Amino acid sequence: MKIGVLALQGAFREHKQKFQELGADAVVIKLQRDLEGIDAIAIPGGESTSIGKLLRQYDLIEPIRERVAQGMPVFGTCAGMIVMANRITGEDVTHLGIMDVEVRRNSFGRQRESFETDLDIPVIGEEPFPAVFIRAPHIEAVGPSVKVLSTYNDRIVAVQQDNLLALSFHPELTGDNRLHAYFLELVKQKSAVGR
Image (cartoon, one colour):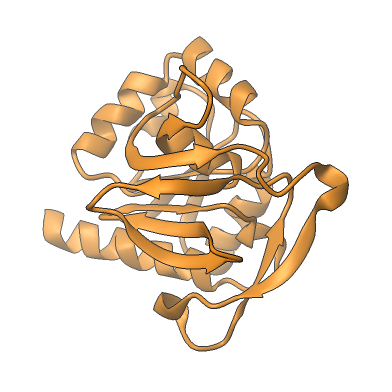
């Protein structure tokens, strides 16, 4: 499996390392040609407006959308979730717009209000997941095909829509690989169906 990690801005190195620890071939994506041969893409945390601008600057929006339309799995964390959303509360502009969710930016406060908490995410097992929230968004509304995987204080913080997985928090900053492993399982299932 070859996983592309969008490396325009943000915590892409940590995602790449997680996938490599789990035995996947992980490569950085900066240009259109880097998309060739990848089975999935991860969009890391960072600054969603900057990531959106750079996606446009490097003409990556349409090629990624086309691959997603063909079933390519996508994993977005924090800013990556905002980039995936087809609606952003209070804003007219979206970025990839590939997931049927409405996202509110910075809904947990500023950088100094960052925190860690244990989340129940049943799809990865009974043991709580140590979630790191940094200037995190949350999901205000989901479409009918979106499954809520976890909430924190009644706010939706983890969702899945077919091959798309989006989280408000940063699993790449923990010692727990279960969410990356869960995403790799989605990629495997997609590859098996595609053969």
